[in-house]
Structures are given as C-alpha cells and as structure tokens.
Amino acid sequence: MIARIATAAVRGFLVTLLIAMPSLILTQDGNGTPEMVVFLALLAGVLVFFEYNSLSPSFIEFRDAPPLNRIRYGTLFVMATGLALLVRHDANPNGLTTLLRGLGYLLGQIFDFPLSPVQLMTLMLPEGTAPDTINTVRSAAGLACFVALVATALLVFAIRITGWPLPGGSFNVWTNLPLFDPTTGGDVVNRMTRDGRLNVILGALLPFAIPGGIKMIDAFLGTASLGHPMLMIWGIALWAFVPASMVMRGVAMLRVADLIAAQRRRTYAASDNLQTI
Image 1 (cartoon, one colour):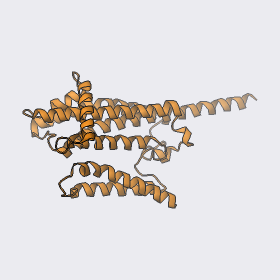
Image 2 (cartoon, one colour; image 1 turned 180 degrees about the vertical axis):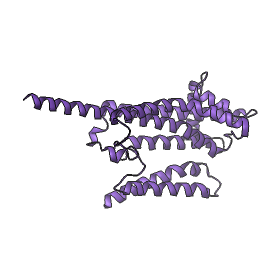
Image 3 (spheres, rainbow, N blue to C red; image 1 turned 90 degrees about the vertical axis):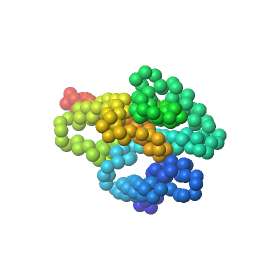
Image 4 (spheres, rainbow, N blue to C red; image 1 turned 135 degrees about the horizontal axis):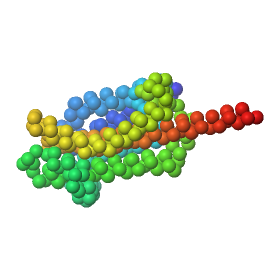
C-alpha cells in the first residue's frame, strides 16, 4: 500500500512538473508562474495520483504495461521543455537554447517540403506575420515532429525487440484498457484490430488536418495566431503529440489483438490434440 501511494505521488508530481515546466522556463522576470498554469498542473497531478493509487482503473490506458505511458510522458515532456527553451532563446539566449534553436532550424528545413505538416503549420499563420515568428514556428514544428517520430520508433522497437507487453508479465485487458468493453460489439480481436487501424490512420492524418482546420476557422473568426509564446509552445506540442499518441495507441491495440489471436490458436491446437488422444 505504501509503495503504491509513493509511486502514485511520484507520477502525479511528474505530471505537475510537465505542465508547469514551460511556464517556469519562460518566467524570468520574477512575477511567478501564472495562476491558471498552477491550477491546471495541480489538477492534472491530483487526477494522475488518484488514478494510479486506485486498485480499479478509470481512464488511463496501459497503466500496467510499461513502457508505453512512459514513452508518452517522455515525448510530451521533451516537446514542451524543448520548445520552451527554443522560444526562450530570443529573450534570454544561452548555450542550451542556442543548440536547440539551431537543431530546430535544421529539422524545420528538413521537414519543410511541399505539403508537409511543417509547411502547413507555417501557411496557417495569418498574413503579415513577422518573418522571425514564421522561422520560430517552423523550427518548433520541425523539432516536435522529430521527437514524435523518435517516440513512435521507440514503441515499435519495444514491441519488435522486447516483445512488449509480455516481458512485464501477463497482460490484463481490464486493467490496461478500462474504456474498452470486451463483452460488447462482436469479436474482441476484430474490434481491437479495427480500433488500432483507425487510430493509426487518424494519427497519420491529423498533423495535416489540424492546420487546415485552424485555417478554415481563422477565415471566419480570425483567431489563428501563434504569436504568444505559451500558445506557440502548447499549440505545437499538442499538434505533434496527440497524433503520435494516437499512432502509439493504435500500434499497441494491434499488438494486443495479435496476442489474443495467438492465444486462441494455441488453445484451439491444444483442444484438438486432446480430442485426438
């Protein structure tokens, strides 16, 4: 019990730190962290603490199937922190911000090919946007895309090389997929396969669709702007993280479906052998 509470507290603190980190990095004038950021960080930390401290899962998937959620957390943490340091370079440059700015610029140029998600992010900006802002958005989008691709590759590596999720023990569908009801909607394997493929497809399309959708909204409401540092950081981080997270969820669902199908084949084979004896 004590170990479970301590582990949940650590996870809650890490989530709180994740949400507050960009604001802490950009706050250099002594005014402190904005109250809204503090509230959201504490709220997210408390929710994660109660989720992992509870014996019954509620909404967090794959909580007992590391390292999927650790990869997700690390992805968003690296994105948010890296983008905050990149944006901070204009106001308070140092060696680390210079390195990230240069890396972001290089990645932005690499990923800025015709009709790429990075190019669509820059085209989403309103007319008359300052060239420095466009370059910053391009660099931030390139860096976020690179982190998302590396994180997805890490999950594929964990599945192909380590055999995730079986090295950690048996896989409990109810604990790791609390929002998935295996008793309704037809065959479990077919449903998981369908949901997994749908998540992968949507995750691959969202980086292209989100900038276009924001541009369409801006044509009517005139609200698309990434000029504010915090809006730029979280907007680009979520633009890259949500699709990557959906792809990772889809790959994980397909893996679980394969494991269930393989278990069924072994069960049927064993049953046939018993009948022939």
